[in-house]
Amino acid sequence: MAKSIEQLTSDRSTYFDWSPVWAGTAVAVATSLVLSQFGAAAGLGVGKTMVNDTTASWGVLVAGLWLAVTALSASTAGGYLAGRMRMPLAAADPNEREFRDGVHGLTVWAVSTVIALLAASMLALSASAGATAASAAVTDIPENVARYARNGSVIIAFATAAAAALGAAAAWFSAEMGGKHRDDNINIGELVPAFMRKR
Image 1 (cartoon, rainbow, N blue to C red):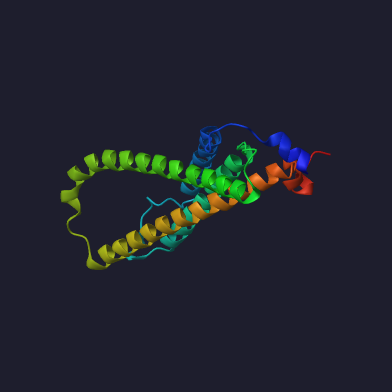
Image 2: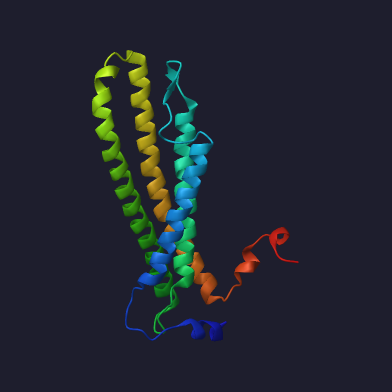
């Protein structure tokens, strides 16, 4: 095992490597987009109606859970890739390697989150332009419908914050796992279930 670790070390003076971070960010953003599209097609989109027949919709809770699943999956995939691809320093001890792997995973989460916030801001700006014209037509909203809509917004906001926190933790620990698999020279094929492997 020591031989495999020596082969993977580098004498570079930099403590941070952006290449694995950008690769992990690309994977995280792509995973998030694919899962978001799947959720929207399955009726789990956040933009769906929050009330149905003047009653609270269970779709709000399911959409919130889907946000968490999407964030966890995207952060795990991106963080693992960043940790696995990072070239450790030759002078770093195992604890330092683990910490640096985690930092790279957390940076993947941070960059992905900034990209998602920028995209959401642009969508909100474009939607607000059309909403001002239609605002006069929706002034007569029943009180219970408005209350359910407010409650749904709170649930989605809480789910978004929880998903972000869970995503940060998932990115950190999956990057550490990727770094451990790199140091142990584990074949990625061994992580695939037996029935999915090539015969």
